[in-house]
Image (tube, rainbow over all chains, first blue to last red; front, side, top):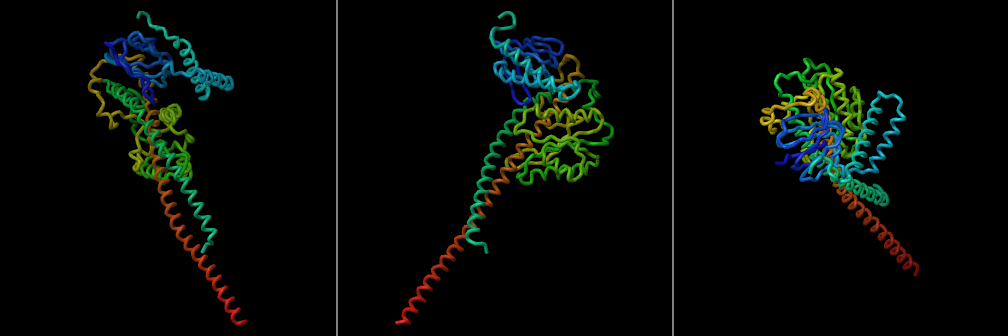
Length: 144
Length: 300
């Protein structure tokens, strides 16, 4: 029995399908959601969402958010979500370089700009490492 | 009476104007479409976020669950986010929303401070000496959510600090190409039961379920309410942009039409003047020829 999974960001539906398992970066650790999971609401950390359908896996970066788990569906309200295959590596690297430059320039660590630059750095780093790790295509969840 | 040359120049310049307004109309038409589409795409998130919110706020014994959900006893000061456009040439679009807001706030009878989105609204409020505590202008066409998120953060901070007791957003709701309506909505304190879409939500099926929370209900609300506030602002801005472009399109179409009318009228006047001057010239020539012939006859 599959579980319905939706990944929604503020400006679009990123992913929507029936899948076999969803792996989420929950606030208190990574969790794998199988069909018939107990109802659960959780916040998400920066990380990777993995969905698997018939042995095929897809990966999504997520920059925090909230997930609602029901026995028959998982709905992820993501702050920003992106399929790993869609990531533009060159642009992500450019963004990381800019963020690092900005961070080294701002002396005061308590300003909004510093926090914004830090967030930008975290986002771009996540995207780069995700793109590098998950583009190869082999499944990452054990078993088949 | 202007000279023929002046009239010709005038006709040409009005024709040029008509061309410009026509181009602006076409551009606005395509921008409206994009803004509407962007607005549509925020719906799934908004719907789902409402569901989660309603669900959380209906948990038993959690009446005063979160400061952003709780009514304050007395509203001493309001904050209004006023959404206008950066550019003019949009008919009465900006004037309407500003006037509507100021009248509504006067009736509400609580002193208000303003956060403006868009240059026009900022200028109008400053001219009327209203307190503007922050302004966001130069937003791109079809802004991303990240561009609008700081506005949400600002109003939530102001509210939590106790500087203001209620937060409203005033913007122009897009209804159709020909109809846009100024509206004022409450942003904070958030009242899940006040939203009209709430009836459509399958809340019954949700609220009977026993959820577990990670980390806890409070932390979840901490996460979701500020985001939701920002999302409402984002949706309002998208709707306002659709309205702005629709208003500009109609204004530009009217301008093109009246320019064409004017060109027609001027063209007729110009033709008449031209005809009159030709007639005069011919009269001169024939008169001259006549005089010459008479003089010749007299000499013989």
